[in-house]
Image (cartoon, rainbow, N blue to C red; front, side, top):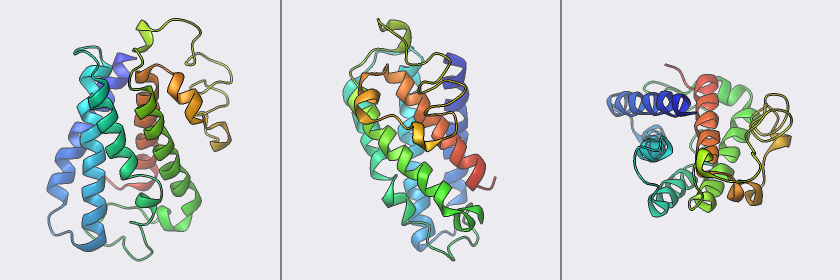
Length: 188
């Protein structure tokens, strides 16, 4: 799991650097959404050392990062992508407007996960938790077949389930949601 977090941290770190450079010339709603994405990227990146177990968990910092992600996701994010706002310097792919249901579902999923991370902020890391795992195979939230990250939004965990998960489990779900959205809807 640490490899995933390290790779995710590197992706977000490089994304922040590219994002800061790419903001040049952006105005209006494109700049607003770039700023929101940058805020979310910084929030995710700020948690990497904790999720890797390199520094102690700080539930207040985790909650603050989760709130930042939550404030810029869901309907807030969706509204920042009106038709006709994909011109340079925007990195948005036309797929956002061609099939908005998928983009909207990811934006909403990210907001739910951010709320879940906020509630799970006091939970230990996976290796430190006791009891049954919510991260194994089969048909669970992170399993390979069906469930939360198996590709169907019907498997979306509710806040109660997320609140009981290890904090890095919810974090990883956020990172995977961001990655899925970027690979599908963001041009390099």
